[in-house]
Length: 326
Image (cartoon, rainbow, N blue to C red; front, side, top):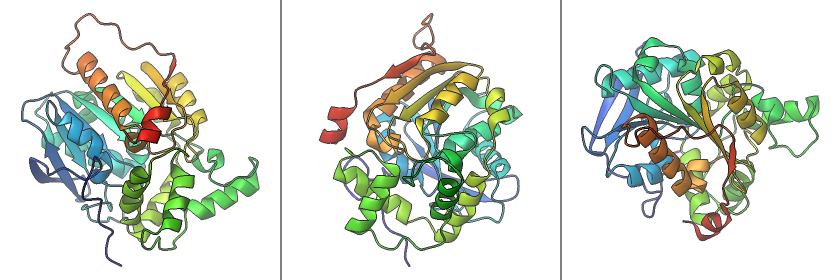
């Protein structure tokens, strides 16, 4: 089956990069990298999640590229990065380090943003010299560090061994996803997005997820099922913010609150009511605003003397933005 093409119009159509390049990871894996925006602008590095690609960040790239250097890359096996037999969190961390080395000058600082498995990539890189050299601050979106299958709410049963087993079977399925049909979109929306997500958001996400090869989807599902990055979270010592949808079934709110409590330098947990797992797509303006805020506070120093965002929970009313598709 040919890969499903991303949407071609609207806020979720992938922008054309200023340039593309290939980063080579420690084991020789080749990674497709895109750079958007002016050279010399403050850098933002984007790491997407499981079954996604650089197209997932289209809304953020489009808004940020006027005044930022936005660096987005395809995780191995996703998008235009070839599959690799090495499927481990260590390999993901190697890949992120390779991208940082290829796109940033020695000592240059960036905001590093990860969604879902991309955020797990950031956690896995915590404490590594190359990561510490380049990461001024971090934004973790819709993620967890362990117990992903046990805590997931995709299967509507009480917590326990039966739900965990069924969830593992669902997430680890080898079945092809097939074309993007109305039924497929309803299933994807239920599992990964809030009930109020606008149709064009669901369409964009479905096209991205359905383009991921099923062998890649299955291989990385096994890694996520066994994930344990609790130690690495405690090593993530740069200022780190967390964004989470309250209706996330894949990585429920319990994960975000645990991260906020465990991070050595948490600078805020933002909970988005009614939003599911796909926060950068479901709440594009709010996620982009958080990125801008963190860049100003920790990368450019545009707000000298400002206090870091407090580490308490902020709740933002997202209802109108979801329904209007802002």
